[in-house]
Length: 396
Image (cartoon, rainbow, N blue to C red; front, top):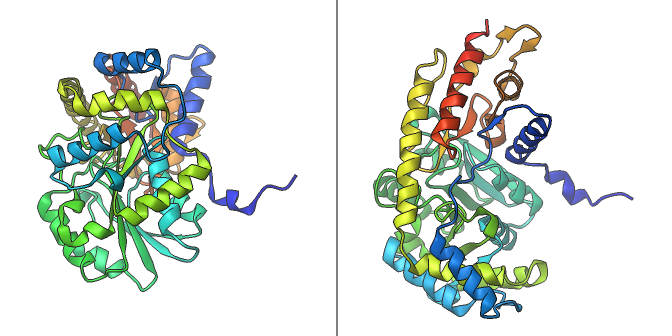
């Protein structure tokens, strides 16, 4: 049976592939430290779990509205005003099965075949696949470590063409941890104002994992409000990865289009999760801030350890929970039969030799780097950094 041609644009994400390989090695009895997936190692806060239990006991087991329970949409609206000073009515918000579906909904509703979509690199692995699935053409803007992996207004304007339909970025960024300031977003906004045909998707899933202070959104610039889609969710800031709930806020016509699309794909998101999410939005954020403080301590340790390894260059991530070290100085080196030709070889060497799972940088658009998640215990991180240091010391 021949499969549809559209599947040619979809490949298994490297993050999931490396996690799978890590699990396979663990099943064979190998002591692997898995730093591949971006998943908080904390339990979901107790008050959120209790809300889910109450929802089951209260009978919230039927189909929910496609766009989400009105109480949840209103809670998100209040949150956006409270935390971000963004004005979105409940009918300008839709919840979906994870922020990944929110992104897919928006891209499929905005991008036609042949449309160009600008994506600064490094970028989250799924952006380009979703654009290609929609028939769009990803156009990458290469950002470098010297600029903290952030796109400049000049770079942005140089890449906009008559075919440009959409710009996608994340802040805090996966995989670099870069965080755009208000002034930096203002510079990008000034460029976008010249090109009214360009829509913007602002992926803000790591909003709460921010070590700089207040989170800034490009949606705050009123001149762009009708062109910006804000994507966020509950997985990272509330340690709810398995609960699968994300949301999108944007212009009413885009939200309505996403609702039509979602009605055919998945209908409404999990009803129990939605009830728990209401409590997450309205409840105590102390557990979230406690997690962020722990991530900051882990960041400081991991970045410090990486800086001590000769040949590695690293920026200091100001958000999310990833390190993105430059490792190309090791290309061409070897240890026995293991030869490091590229970033994939580098990650496989760390997995085979040090038994530490990472993700190659080419998955994120830059093959000179690897991604290391520090969403793991300090015990595991110390173990991993010691193993990595030792393994790299054996290359020559």
